[in-house]
Image (cartoon, rainbow, N blue to C red; front, side, top):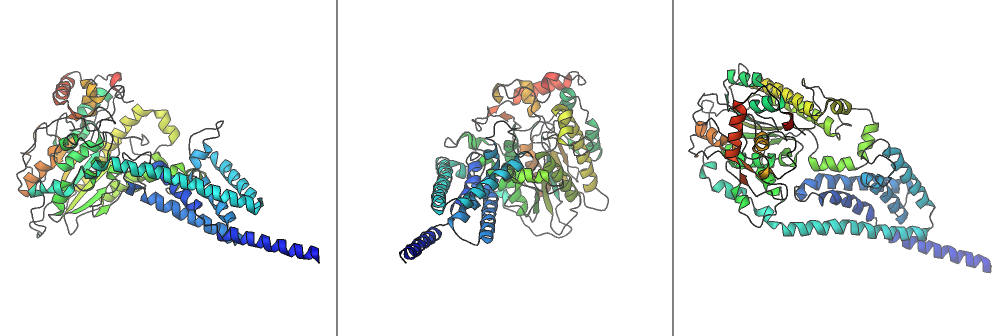
Length: 560
């Protein structure tokens, strides 16, 4: 009897301990690990990413953690610490896949490779079996340790994010869209009522990223696209000879174009951190051009790229980026989803996490959708940021999507040339479709935001680079089609900062003064808003380049 009583007492004690363990086991750490996986990437990119850009990744990671936890509980039928620990093994193992697998030094450290998948799954399964066999007291200790570790992994990057936002408050207030519009009263003046007779033309604005001027492409890259230039001129375009951008990087160029002015106000803000790209991204999200046209009844449709600056525009009526944003694409590539997709059969869905293949899936569908827009009840303003000939260099000259092996064998120099040819083909297809018989011809602007990166351009600050390098980097295509044929507002050396001033003056009766066409560079990514005027040096170099032997190619200036 004594032995029996002692046994019953021990069972009661074990039962109490088990009950206490179950009742106290809030499953926090699986969800905290999910949050931490997103914050780990966010905290490394605060200077160029708004917290809002991470919301999809955050929501997806938390949903994944919930699914994993529910699946473990459903199998074990217990809401206890052991279930929480098992869930964290799989949540952390999947979401921190790249970082965890990278500790295996004797394997290829590149993330998302197929070999990492069986290793990761085997390790997670082994840890799961170990936890199942651990005594309850040990599980409780692991549970508490994981909770503490997860809290730290959230608090540390969370504190860094909060501190960064506090220190860089000026970035959020550097650009005020309402103030920017109010400074130009004609932006919001106007009427959005019109009949068919007074309906303004549709406007299509195309950016072919890093497409240099025909003169630069021939002399410095050995590719002749004067056929495309002749095609545009025959179609009624005014093509600016030896054109240049106002700035040497995409964010500056597009921001100033849509702001319809230079970015001096950013340079004058001494509280603005020198490496914070976010004011420029904010300028791309709510700009003067969009406000002007929307006030006049236009429907704004944006075809963005993966890049944060154009992926999504909050004031656009439609956004068609056709893929993941830059932040979310990077985040997913760090997770186990990338090698899982590589194991599965190759489809559009499973190859969406590949930089190269995702680009193939984006450009073609976007071009076809633009060609098929047609005329609508409202006049359209269509902006398309097309990352061709910008890398990755995965298109052939005829637009075929190359494999990684084919692209590497071809090399970046030839890859850039082939994608220039492909971009030229896209331009001609778009113009042909938009000027098709039976539709009212729209206004069309075809530009680049910057030229290619010449070889050696990273060796020195941009303002100390040679005029030749500065000239190549700011060399762009710049072509306008105004259906009424009135190009009186377009100077021979007009730059994008004046594009919409000229357009609005021509078609909407405004009187925006045309600004002096200038060219700026900033030293590097630590001094983003230290602008140096290189107009005269670039113009002089451009004149020398055009007057020289255009058929000779200087290998020293070829793309890196």
